[in-house]
Image 1: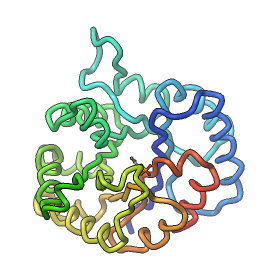
Image 2: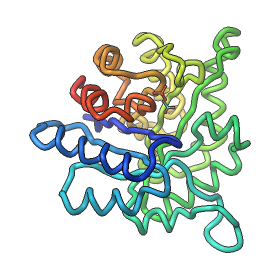
Image 3: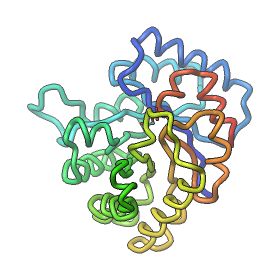
Image 4: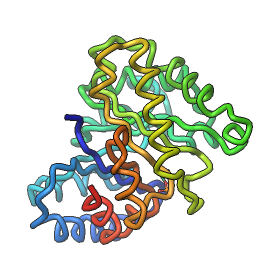
Amino acid sequence: MRRKIVAGNWKMNTLLPEGELLVKQIEFLTKELETDVEIIIAPPFTHIATLGKYIKDYEMNVSLAAQNCADQEHGAYTGEVSAKMLHNLGCKYVILGHSERREYYGENSESLYKKINLVLNEGMSPIFCIGERLEERESSRHFEVVSQQIKDVLYRLRGVELAKVIVAYEPVWAIGTGKTATADQADEMHAYIRRVIGDKFGDYSENIPILYGGSCKPSNAKEIFGKEDVDGGLIGGASLVAQDFIGIIKSF
Ligand code: PGA
């Protein structure tokens, strides 16, 4: 039985007071919730310490993730935040390789491989994002693109390291666009991703959670999560509204 996971990626949204309110609402709505879904939130760096304390004080069943980390351990890297700093604040996860970071900040497989290792060395788990652009799907290169993203980074890990990774399949054309992959498109790609991981790592692939991301909301989550190879979601816009975020969690 694979883990079920719903992770909220807040991106560069909310001021701290708004973030605190959102966590309070999540706390209220999850208090009575009996669920086997692991709930993760990834707020901006500036909120992590405060929200982490709240989560701890109220014994919330929510784990903290960061949205990125530095590709160096420590030192003279102005403006960067290290994996160790994030772990020290209670983060269990770090989202790595989100398409917005690949696209706008030039992240590539080399820097992502370094980041994955730093995150793993701290005992945290990477939520490793992959996915094709619209033109790549339209020219039927989506499988090739996704497989290359996996080979360039994940194939360089050892099996025991790979076992700590969560994969998020996020077709770039579905992120923030309101356009979701159909449940069948998601399932097809998730099964493919598991096969590509399995080609290198054998049975390890069976236990890797693969999350879907891209305009996931309460109205479509049930169908997507109902698919065999979909183990949850990485949620952007809808994670900023507590009711919607919990609605998605309840879709399992
Ligand atoms: P979205 O974003 O749910 O707003 O499409 C998903 C993501 O980028 O993780």
